[in-house]
Image (cartoon, rainbow, N blue to C red; front, top):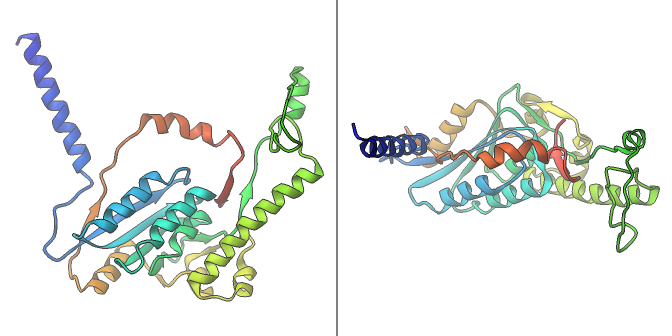
Length: 275
């Protein structure tokens, strides 16, 4: 076979393989009705994919309900809040059911709150209502290595959170104030969506985690069950006996694979995350 035909054949095969890979997550439309499944896994660093899927499913007339399939310890505060907003925007448009797998804690619990129904396995790890902010302090290590930093800044607190020196007492108070403000936002949102008085939420909002069964007893989730239970609930809400599940196509980003580990040790970030 001539080289040019080999190249053409290889290109055709590549296109077919890519097409299969992209289409693997999608299923054919169902006469009964489709349910879009948005998967939220690992630590939440960026909201982009999840938000896009939520709005795509929300705007698609063939999708009659959305299931959030959550298996995450939470993540960056702003990213969790953007996903929360996208879930909330579906209210009144179509039912949203949150299905918690092994863990749906902190920011992952936060994004489940606007759902119409929250389903957790009895052994799901959930809760962890709280905020954390942390970064390494390398001051002693740098001293041993003889490395110093020169800092020129516009005002007093411009380098707050620097890794090469400890914070002053005043800086610690400022950072604590910010963490407390975001924590209060979390408590208020939980109180709103779970129809619980603030005092009741505060009793459990100290960062502790709960099993799914414990969370149901105190009102943080609605019912116990698996992902299949969530599918059945969605079907019952829509009057669909055998709903068709539709998954958004997955696209692998090598840039994300390279950058995600670096994000964990870079600049300070506010986290809704269970450690």
